[in-house]
Image 1 (cartoon, rainbow, N blue to C red):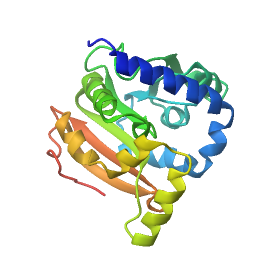
Image 2: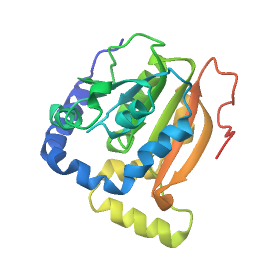
Image 3: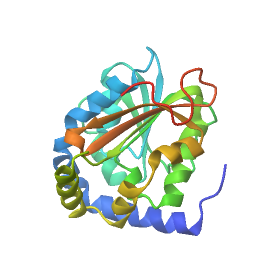
Length: 226
């Protein structure tokens, strides 16, 4: 397992400061995407009894959505203040919440059936984003599911303009880079075979589903479902 670089350590400290500040209002900020949590689980379609790891879980809504369906869920986040909110929520006893760094996961290789990240990649510089995805791939079993939920843009020009301007009011430079980047190519580069992609929240969000090497379903860049 690789060590944390100075750049990643500086980034981690910045993230922790920022999210400790917004933790009290984070759930209010994410009300528009609340329904998407369950929709993402439906899209992932884990097999019964699957083990799930949710990285950068924040206040735990995506992890809890998996747990409500009966899956065995572990969830990590860098920020103690966010996890304190998560463990207060109904059903939190069904999730193992713990502090953790998604760039250097403490879990062994091939430990989980499903590994998810929700509305976190856009906050990361490109090098850290890639490292997180590589770690997610490492801890997923061969042929396991990788689920990414994050910002997207509507297909029509007016919708793209409005969503881009609105989200840019409260997100930083990494959002601008993320929304312009080719996530599909990055997923393929780290060994995730894209098997599905879904537009959500009127185009303002997107869900990507892939499988790690060892899968008999799909191939790099191929989408078997929408």
